[in-house]
Length: 496
Image (tube, rainbow, N blue to C red; front, side, top):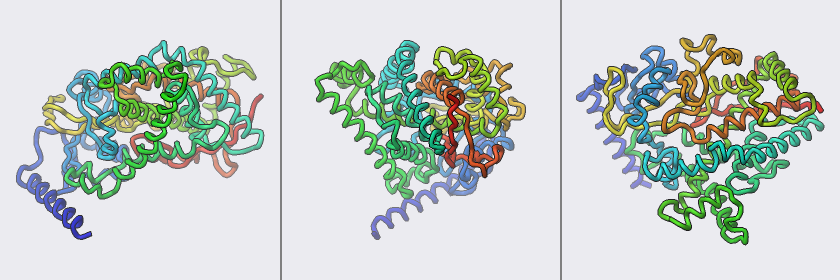
């Protein structure tokens, strides 16, 4: 016990001496944007709080939309305006997108080396991106998987029908998570990962939620790299266990496919990956396949279900908006008819509800952190190599200089607005932009309105009688994604 303690003491002493020298001798670099004056050693870490996206949005009001902070030993650039985001994500996209700032949590299982979200832009990154685009996100792939989305939504409606007939509460986040999870698993593996009629998805949802929390939670190692060998908060150790569980599931599914007589006959994403692996294992290794699936399942299932849960929460808090949405659905589909994906395009108000939800509750509050590979100019500032870059999508979506009554849920604002959420309009960037834009965006923008419209068209929804709509909880649970701190439980009242 004494030897590890000695190592920690020496590392902390070295870190303190170096930080103090930098602060008092070298001073704060004057070529950086303005920001709060850092304290010795910790910099501005004490200002982050439990909700860093909110804390940094408040600081930006004082120091400006391009702000620099010293977080421990890490120089960090925070972008909090649409114009600055456009500069970073579009005009100078290559300079700001080539590298990632890697949270130490993602060193677990060496995930960052294989993750399409965190590896540098390279030949391997382009190969993986092409695989996802060709087999999941392209228009052709989305059209061919439309029947799967229809089937999964029918299962969701049936589950809610059963709960409604028993007057049981439904956990919106959990049931929509299972729907998203099984949709992705059918695209990838041609099978469900959970039974839609049972509570079998609970463990997987908690596992994915824990991964998002661990990857996004403030970690001393990320601010003081000298502590990485110690992992003092145990974040990497916990993440290692989470990753092992999910990778173990994928290993079993791959072995099952390789050992079956129907090998390479499913024509799904797994088949395609195994064919590439067989023909050119250096291009796509078996470990790379599992890591690709890890990215796909964790990001795809969690962000979609979170968005639907936030949308339902906002609609229940604003019953007049829900009434208007249900009226539009009745006019398009008629009473007792299932929602069809092709006809969702005929629902302009529902589209506004989705956009407004993504504006107020972007799936990822800070776009995944970037790292400056070489010194770069941003407006009148010089940003040094190695600077971490955070784009605060949450703050941009609530910027009162862009959005009137920016804290209010008002879908009508998008009826007369040309702003979209697909990465070209920087006033709302829930999926990011540029080369690093979320590859799952096309699938999410089909799945979210389909699920939401099906829940609204087939059911009325009752809150607990003790809860008034406007008092419905909006507390956020911060991680890489923003989850509802307290799940939304409601009783579905079947309309058919």
